[in-house]
Image 1 (spheres, protein in one colour):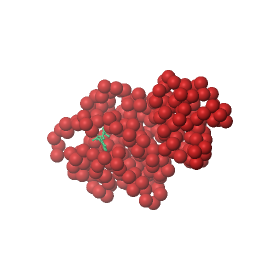
Image 2 (tube, rainbow, N blue to C red; image 1 turned 45 degrees about the vertical axis):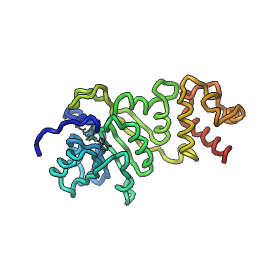
Image 3 (cartoon, helix red, strand yellow; image 1 turned 60 degrees about the vertical axis):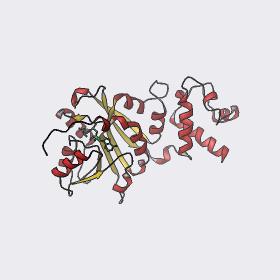
Image 4 (cartoon, rainbow, N blue to C red; image 1 turned 180 degrees about the horizontal axis):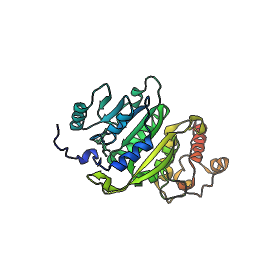
Length: 263
Ligand code: SAM
């Protein structure tokens, strides 16, 4: 099956073609024999093949049937397990029945970048680390710090579970077809669970969403369904601030205070 693959926009297909960038990404991942690695969206195999060279066995999750057929033709199931389907619905815990911590990598389809990050966050306990290529703008939001324009819901909800670092940027010319935007490589490492724990994760999500829903408004306004003046005093948080001023730990303290009050 050597005919050209027509890149599919609906699957966010931009294939890496620059060998130097591919090498740099693989060096950042540092795959080792015995690692349990799953690659999301192997595509035409730009990262898959160098990963396989370093390891006995690799897992991939791919949605495009044509690309799955190509991978099957090229690689034996002894070396490559292909999980056919949507990574957004994939149970990543199913790859680690024995507790070997999972390493997740991928040049992620940009059209589903936020939902896939939230889906993966649910498996944080099973994960050793994750290394992804994403739109630079999304990575800047992931690693954004309080008080900056990039800091928002994505920053808080991901930084709650992961330590993250932007490793380097990748220009559009490294892909075929070239995307319109710059990309960045980000590394995500789960934080120890004890470091900062919300008693009610769903409530944390609701409070963070409310606080950033209207960025210009103060916490007194955005969190009025959750906190009154006495609560702000008890928490030692100024109700005249905007949500972007609060740290991840502040949001967790608020969520735990609200949970206690209503529980
Ligand atoms: N890893 C390849 C590379 O670097 O050249 C391809 C990267 S391309 C940006 C994204 C890949 O994810 C494509 O192979 C696409 O078919 C696949 N993909 C898109 N949506 C997906 C989904 N929901 N679940 C699994 N794979 C998906």
